[in-house]
Length: 377
Image (cartoon, rainbow, N blue to C red; front, side, top):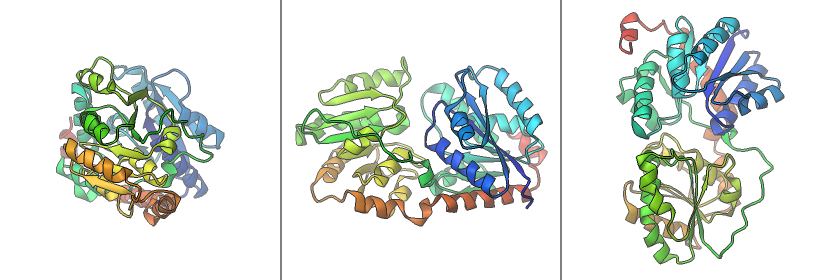
């Protein structure tokens, strides 16, 4: 394969999170191998995206397209202009919005989609998920973050010949040094939930279970970190639970490590989960994890003695799971953390090679037939 291939890496987001860190790591490795990566970020603010700033600081070509709203046509025109200027041989997307844009603007080019799952919450998000599935049917290759998500995509009617599992790697983690842990204001124990406050994440189940957890552990405190769609019916549903005794809602924080390092256990009560970045961060830090047995979480917890899987949609199971994780003899600490995060499957170079194999696969495929394009028109 020619080493002069130009690759556009597309990402629509608001922050420099795990997916962005991993994408930047991938761009650096592409450049080392002689490729020409270009990171293009869609950002809701008119200022440069944090990933654009980080990429440029490391010598990777990057630009930001202002994306003021889902209804604006301006970012579509700007992206079309950028693709015409760069003339990439490969377009690599990382989320539902860039998937949909690449499906239309990238016609005639090789397009791969890196799929991290779908977000729940209201009809607008359901519409985007619907559009994403139909867009993905046009991609030359779809790289899923877990076997469970690959299976789900196949069930949506996406050709199995174009599906591959690439997983995630430790490049998604925050680099050292870490900020200091949060200073507890009580004896604890301290339980952490970090993630979107949306229905598929199941934080309502944890809040329902909280009174029973507190009866077993009277000094327990629950730290809730994450963004929530204000004014939504789900936000109204969560409101009473977030004001329970011992529950502390801190809103969204880009870096959860101060709370993670101080926590005695982490809970991932998801109803659906393609992979689970917070769960991964917890296990890599040696923190006891209570996670539901859904989606990619069981696969993620393989080789983790400090993970305890519970039945989904079951508050009693969460109560019991938290008690098990808080027990003094439950595995935790740096020894189990090191053994977990050094598993070969989490090696960034190994993931990079998997993605390169997907590039080769995509370049070898014939363009999607017109009858398949009509399926998403």
